[in-house]
Length: 548
Image (cartoon, rainbow, N blue to C red; front, side):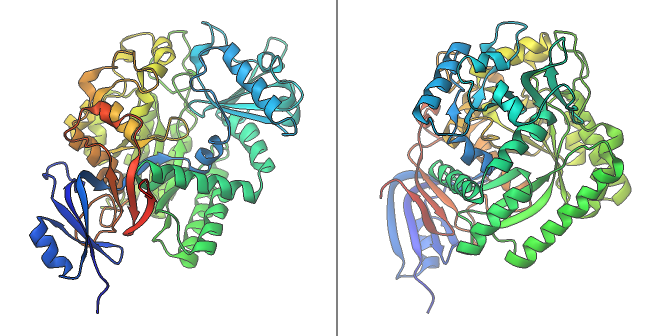
């Protein structure tokens, strides 16, 4: 005798396909969807003994798939001093001093999400500013975009940074006229020195807590799947401890292993063998239902706020930095990864970086031949040329974008450093749609808030969540509700070859569903603001229930 099914009825059920009208009900059995549609048909499929849950007209969607996330970093950031809404240097100092006073035995003070806007024109972060607030222990503050770290003098000392410390490939220890480090670490310097320092200080218990907090935070906001974008050995170990303990994860995750540009061609390519070993060992030990290492991540360039994104034309200040991965270095590594069946995920924010990213994709096709399951993707695409968008359509490359990154409240500095018409052509969601490029949406948490309804609100309005008095940024770019929901569900699942099982509500798919307290298809977008899921199901079982 088969187990009893559960029917969720009296609902508006969005299936994940923007072209399909909402359905009335959905039935679930043994973790899978068995039927979706009119109530009579769903009852017939579910059987006469099915349990029925009346949702009172609520909106139901597939569980959202976070298209770009850093899970352990998100969990860790939830413990840090929050600085995204600190509107001045003085407010940053006040919050740091308060955190130090509240935890006098803490070995360091950690903060996150400060914005470049707090600095007057031409000024940059310095250790001296932080020393004025906290001088006795290391202070390390991640920028909002996670591409630079601001530290105090005690942190420079603890990390061993002095005049003789070399800049890593693709990064910079900012120095004064005397050659002394100022307390500002850019790009790979932030990763090599600050992140590695923090990783060495963290325990396995810390990382397990970070991971659990990230899962819980996402489930509350309707997310039932995530795409990891900076995976490495420490992340893998934390996930495997959870798998060993529970036999599963709270929801399925697809991971991209973060590659490092070393300047040594042989060492660069050798990283692919390391990823393949990790992928195969993971699959042999745990299967792939919950965690898959699906690809590799190249950080092709930096970010516009710090003037480190690789652009075709100079910034307003005349700077024209090169990429972190240039063509000569990136192409052979990309070809090796592609030959091993690893998906390419290419961080490219500047228009020159995205052109190099597509050169890498094209080289994979030329060398390794066509393949239907290649699914390359480019991340962010904040400033991208029309010819690159056309190439993405021709090469079937997914555009992985984050509406929260163009919240008008954080764009002042972004627009100022571009200083020309490029500031008005950023985040061209509409151009990608018109060109037929597949879209996957996410948040890139913790570089931006992880709250899915707020992310959806920005996609629908181009308005600010952080400062709701702001005018929208380029409102002609916005999504229709159905298109945005598809990009947050089926689009993000398709980007990682999971579309047959998640990201949609269809017979045979995993029953990962969300019941919302607002209807994005019919309510005003403002109804989404600051909301959470009412009920989140993973494989048919409640993973978060606000009603409980």
